[in-house]
Amino acid sequence: MSLWKQAWIIAKTDLRVEGRSGEILWIVLPYGALALFLIPIATALPLKTLSDIGIGMYWVVVLLFGMFVTLRQSSQSSPQERDLMRLTLSDPAALFLGKSVASATLLGSFQLVMGPIAVAFFNPALPAQWWLLIPVSALLALAMAMTGTLVGFLVAGTRSSNALAPLLAAGLAFPSLVGASIATTKLSDSQSIVTPIALLLLVVAITAAIGMASSTLLEDQ
Amino acid sequence: MKTQRTLTWLTAVALAYGLFLAITSPADVVQGQFVRIFYVHVSTAWVAFAAFGVTLIGSLAWLGFKRPILDRTAAASAEIGVFFTGLAIMTGMIWGKPVWGTAWNWGDARLVSTAVMFFVYVGYLALRRAISNPIVRANRSAVLGSMAFLMVPAVYFSVNLWRTLHQGPTIRSDGASMDPAMLSAFLTNLAAFSLLFVVFLITRTRLELLAESVASAEASERHGLAEPDLEML
Image (tube, rainbow over all chains, first blue to last red; front, side, top):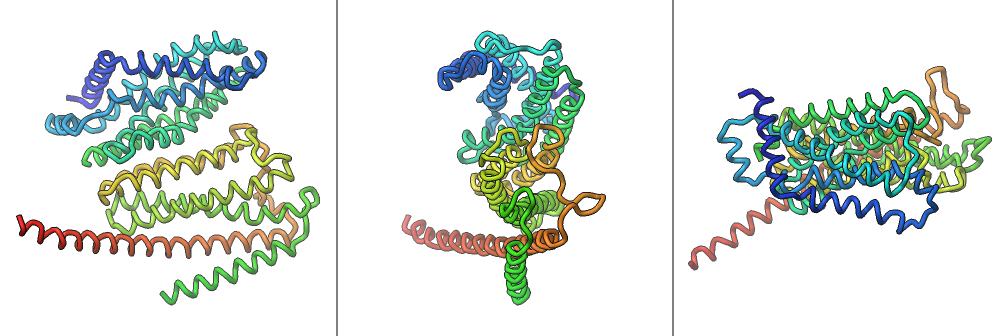
C-alpha cells in the first residue's frame, strides 16, 4: 500500500475517533470561545481598542487553543496501537502525515467556527480582501498541525508530557503565527501578502521534511 | 586538563582587556555612556546563536554517528545558549530603558522573537529532563535540537519581515560604520565571549560525563544492594 493511501486511512481513522470522542467540539471550542469572551472583561478596554486588537486576539486563541487540537487525547497512540502499526508494516512517515492531515482538518474547522465568534465579539475592521485570509488560515492550520504532531511524537510517554507539549508546540509555532499576523497587517494596508504566504509555505515544507525524516527514529522508542 | 587551564586564563585576560576597552572607548554621540552595554549585549547574543549552532551540529552528528559525546555536547551547548540568550535579553532591557524609554518594546521583532527562542530552548532542556532512557533522550533531543534551530534565522531575519526598533547591522559590507576605538572594543569583547563559550562548553560537557559516571555507579550500587533482598526471598 502506498504511503499516501496509508496516510489517508490513518487520517480518516483519527477523524472518526475524534468524531466519537467529541473532545474538540465539546471541550476545546467552548473553551476557546470563553477565552475570547474573557479578554474584553479582563482588559476593560474601550470598544475601539478591542476592535483594533480583534484579529490579533483571534490569531492568539487559534495558536494557543490550536495546541489543544493538535495534542488532543484522541490523537495520541497507546503503546499497543504503535505495536500494531509496526506489525502491519505501516510506514512511520504515513503516521506523521495522516495525523497531521487529521489535525489540520480539525484546526481548519476550529478556525471556521472561531472566526465568526471573534467577529461578533470584537467587531474588527476586516480588510477589503478578507477572503485572502482563507489560504493564510489553511496554511497556518497545516503548519500548526505538523508542528503539533511532531511535538506529540517527541513527548510521547515522557514525564510531564501534558505540560511540556504546549510549551514546545507554542514556541515552534511562533514563525507561523508571525506569518499570519504579517499577512493580516499587509492586507489591512492593501499590500501584497506573497512574503507571509512564502514564510508559511517554508515552515510547512521544513516541518514536513523533519517530521517525515525523523518518524522512523521516533517510532522506534 | 592543562590546555583547559591555559584556555581559562586566556579567556580571563581577554575578558578583562575587553572590559577595559569597553570602559575607555569613546561615548556614542546619540546614546552617550549607554553604548557600553552594547559591547556585552551583542557579544552575548552572538554566543547564544553560536551555542545553538553547536547544538544543531551536535544533534545532526548524533543522528549520523550515535556517539554519546555528540549528544552531551549538543545538550551542554543548549544550556549555555539559554544562559546567554537570557543575558542578551537582560542587557537589551537594561539598555532599552534609558535609550528607548522602556525596557520591553512589543514593537521590536528581534526582542520578541529572541524571547520566544529562549522558551523553545528551555523546552529542549525540559524534554531532556523528562526522558530517563539515554538513547531515547538523545534521539528525541536531536530531532528537537534540529528543529529548534529554525528559530535562529527567524530571530535574525525577523527585523526584515516584521516591525522593529532594532538598529541595522553594526558592521556593513561597505566598511565599518564605527569609530576605530569602538570597533576594537567590540571585536575584542566578541572574541573574549567566544573564548568564554568554549571554556563553558568544555567544562559543562566534562561535568555531564562525570554526572553520568556517578549515576551509573549509583545504579550499580543499588543493584548490588538489591541482591541480598532477593536471596532473603
